[in-house]
Each structure stands twice: as C-alpha cells, then as structure tokens.
Length: 102
Image (cartoon, rainbow, N blue to C red; front, side, top):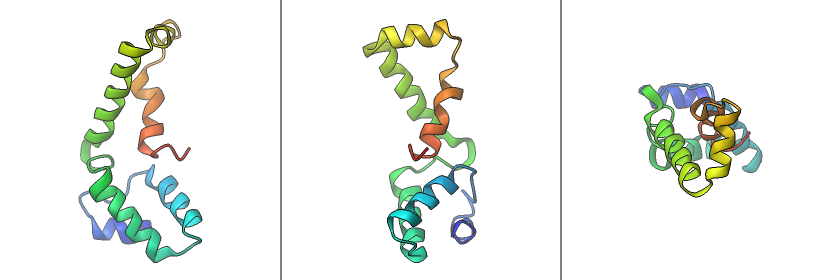
C-alpha cells in the first residue's frame, strides 16, 4: 500500500511515519487494502497536506502551535518542559507525524 501511494504521489513519496498510519487503517478497515489506500490518500492530500512532504512544514507548524498553546494556557507544564530540557519539536513531532497512532 505504501509503495502504491509513493507512486501515486511522488512529491511526498514515502515518509517513515506513514507506516503507522497505514497499519492503523488496515486494522480499522479490516485489512481492506484498497479502502486503506484511498483513505491514506485522503488523509495525506486533504486532511494533513504538507505533513509528510518536503520539509514537513504542516507538521512543524502544528507542533509549534501545540507548544504555543502549552506556553499560553498550561504554563506550569511549559515550565517543566524547560526544567527538564525537553525540546518540544523533538519530543512531540512523532505524535504529530504518526497522527497520534503511537
């Protein structure tokens, strides 16, 4: 399925985290590979464009927005992240890249 998608959308191709999304789709859609392929296409091209493409700009923007939210509305958590030297872009990007499937 991922090879077929990489051929369909050469600009995105394959990105490491897409395997988690594809696996979940196959489970939820009861191993219907064609439905999973088309659902993956809709997710990648309409719901989260630029998430897995060059520069992962959509994912980076959402990660930054998440951090802005924490800093503005959950400052105690933001302070703990600083205290523990956690780099949010590194710590949280896998959540966003896998669309919270992990």
